[in-house]
Image 1: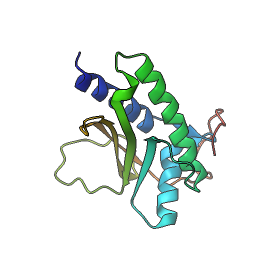
Image 2 (image 1 turned 90 degrees about the vertical axis):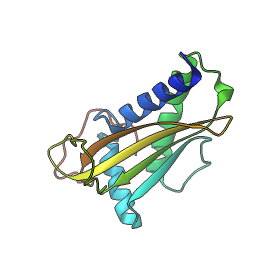
Image 3 (image 1 turned 120 degrees about the vertical axis):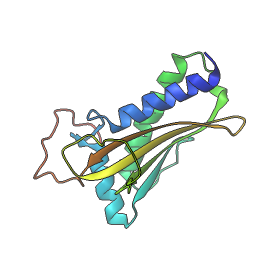
Length: 154
């Protein structure tokens, strides 16, 4: 398999995990918490830098998610045939309240706002290898959500 395919597979693994219901922070779905954070900041998108990791964004949730996916990136790269030096930059872009009127994609979920997640790996030549996943979610509201027994995170 070529490096391009391997890097796209790694991006797909990161993106798929990111939109999954197993992406918890303090027992709640991290995407809902990120949506609340974006709303409180007055923005409709967030970028989470995984490689290189930021020294600290002043937002504990962003730092927690970045560290979690940096560890996942290291596991995925070490289990593939990709040399670690090939990947120079990795980030996840999350867009909330996405207008996809022309999209043929059916958003899974029972409601909420449309969310688009894009995981991008940039190689040493500057080429971007990415995967996109879509889902729906509402802003984090502990009074309406069940809390997982996994309580790590912020």
